[in-house]
Length: 564
Picture 1 (spheres, rainbow, N blue to C red):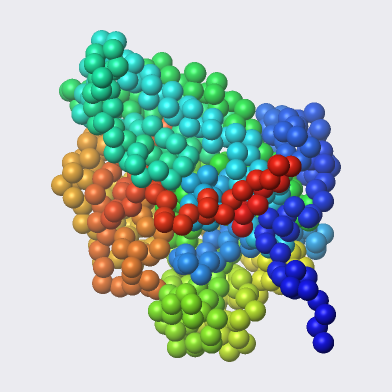
Picture 2 (cartoon, rainbow, N blue to C red):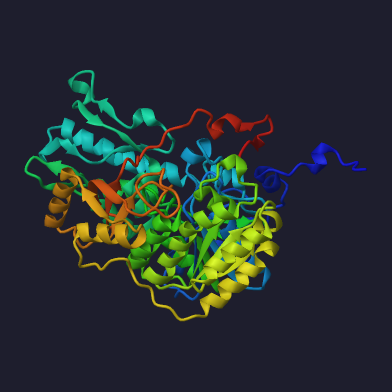
């Protein structure tokens, strides 16, 4: 007879696991990472920022491991969880391992995800802090972005010496919250003293070019130069107007000086983790900051990092943008998948994913295989598939995934890090370390000297497997203008739905016979790339009918609940 209570049998939530795990003082974590205590700027006892300046010239020595995933589904994949568990597993095997993750945005935390610090026994902590305000980086980014917007409108109000065309302002204000009401607004109403009336709108903070610059900058000086190059709009005679023209970059950099320092926290098992910048690979480039990545590469023997959403978005941008601009090359790539998600791609509804269905799994497997082929054949990198295992997975289903991957010359490793932490990732860690010893050469999706339209077409055809790209008349005009201004040599950041290889979120699996529609092309001159907006992708999400915010609460002691 089972005498255990329901409470004893209940599986702990992520936040309960995190709150019940003792944390090391951050000074001990820093010591483990080889960081001098004098470089720490404490944010309480378990968080710190790192003054990277003394480490800036330290050569990179670590092997770089990129974790990406299949096209996301409501069933979940577990990319961050796998990244954390892999780092813990490598540390368990005695390897000096550093973890580099992106900071969560408040938008998804209160909207869909309810948290983004890993899950189960593979988390970074303190998870409540990381998921909420953390060290204030995103607030600083939003403030810098909105300072530029205020200076722009003040310039127009006070005589508009630059001759800015108010119909061609491209710079938007931002807020780190899903708020569809702010997508399109009319501002400057109420008379002459209140500004010049015009149409405007908000993006979510993580879609700001300031976020991209923050993640790609290598120093304060580099940050200021990049901020100064931001194009905020155009004059009446079609000349670009920059943040430098508005004398904005110095004050913006002053707001960002502390945020620019990487954040040091720990995993549940005490592995050093640098959580800094970069979510939303569907509308931004979705990578951890270069400064944090460089620090991890200088301090460790292995550095594990993630890129957002599926490999068609995060990994493509990590490789084609971040690696190109920062001179990086992953030594191994992990593609995370679940049997449940693959069955979802094969047409099984979320309520029936616990049932064995080899037919649906086989139908959904092309999604995984296309991501794998992109990594191995387009980019030329060694790859392993990590199956984030669920108790409902059957041996027959796992065997089918393994067989299909092996046909491509890629091994499959089972990952049980959600349930077992680092111990559950040893098989994956061993395969990753084996791959890191293989020789490889990174190839990009497109060459620098191609035109912008050709670069977009290369991504669409080679990565998405589209038949081609349709550019709206407005997009064609924008491309011509940007190339005429000298921006044609930049890489391209695609803004696309994360739920499909196509620009139609309803096309699951590995669709064929489709075309990509590009409706707008704009330059992020400070970041150093051009953004192509496809389909109906939005740069300001909205909340659903029952957002995660409904479940989040705090008690009299300050203990937070409801994050998951």
